[in-house]
Length: 235
Image 1 (cartoon, rainbow, N blue to C red):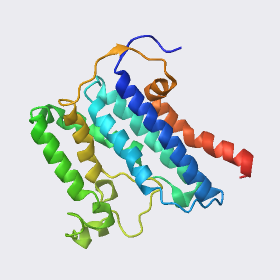
Image 2: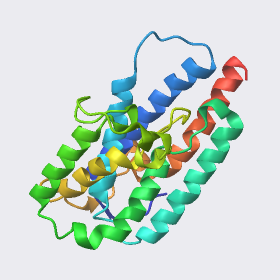
Image 3: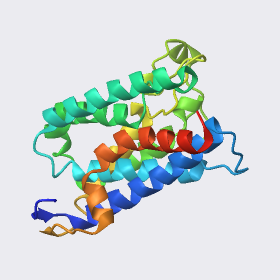
């Protein structure tokens, strides 16, 4: 049973609602990519809604964290397990820098610069972060500023995929490089000064409970989905 304590229930609910949508999306993805289903639909915008929500919430919630070093170590450990597990399951779809890898490195970056970031005006920080995120959104597709500028090819030849500059042969089943997503993370961070929630007694709504355990659910849900689908449709 969850310990009754004060929580930001609105944040737990938003995180829980997003994790439910993520499970649905990955279920559809698995069925289409591993079990021969064809939904004849592009789920790109659904996937973007989910990841944008997670990263904004994570940036916002960084104001509640006290032990960033512990958080980084947990995320880094999970990221390594995800890479290893995905590689064993399917080399073609192995995850080398997915959203958990991103959260791990974003946490490390925040540890290093949080004392400087908090000195920036929230309004200015939000505007700059939004401009950088939107302008650099497609950098890992080979262009910036809405396709008007193409970064030098030699940068991509270096395969700096962590930074958002992947080489031609780079592939990852889930891919969230530091650029541009770190700027979305800080959009969430700076939104804290404009959107306030009150702490209340922790809600026992199932969505809130899922929100409080979103990292564990994220780590386990694909294992469970693959196990269920394998039982139903065969391996």
